Amino acid sequence: MSKILLARHGNTFGPGDRIVWVGAQEDLPLVEKGEEQARALGNALRDAGLTPAHIICGPLKRTRRAAELVAELTGFDGEIQIDQRLREIDYGSWGGKTAEELDSEFGAEAREEWDLHHRRPAGADWSPSEAVLRTQALASMAGAAERDGLTVLITSNGILRYMYNALSGPDADVKVKTGNMCAVEISGNSGTRLFWNEKPDAVLIRSTLG
Image (spheres, rainbow, N blue to C red):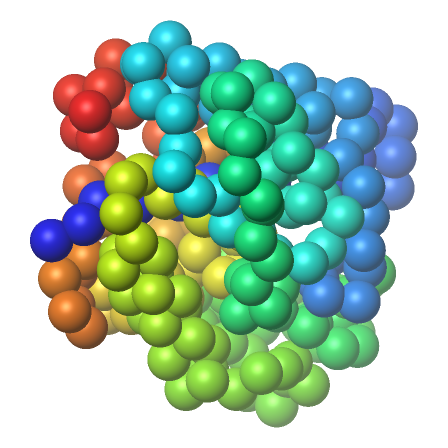
């Protein structure tokens, strides 16, 4: 069995910004707060006495920058690897719109089904398919588990939802807040959640992954 640390990138909106749904087509950078959140993860790993053996992230600016900051603060001297399977979901015509705009166009119930229950709205033009997302989520974790040492995967909320789903099946509240972390233990093609959606914390990291 191998343990993996998963993390969501930090904030991409600052105070006063128009907050919209951000998917694969919305390649936004981290704002100042988002960089602080990435540094908090790096500091927690350092304070736990752990240097990642591998850092893997999605290809979007927000995940690449978070990975760079974690690497810098932990003394990681390897090459950050890009995994296309960690790219956020493409939300199609939902991307780039506010919650109010989505409610007006598609209905509040459809949006809340996803936000609250991880149920993809019927007819939503999102991609890849749910079957592909579940397969890719499990494959990315299984691939990371084959590596020696601690692997850190940095991705986005939509992908983390499918990682949870691949391990545990559908659940009511699988959302991971910006900058938060999760840990899983993988054995073959199955795994167990060790913790989920926690703020970076050196004591928790050391007790779970040390």
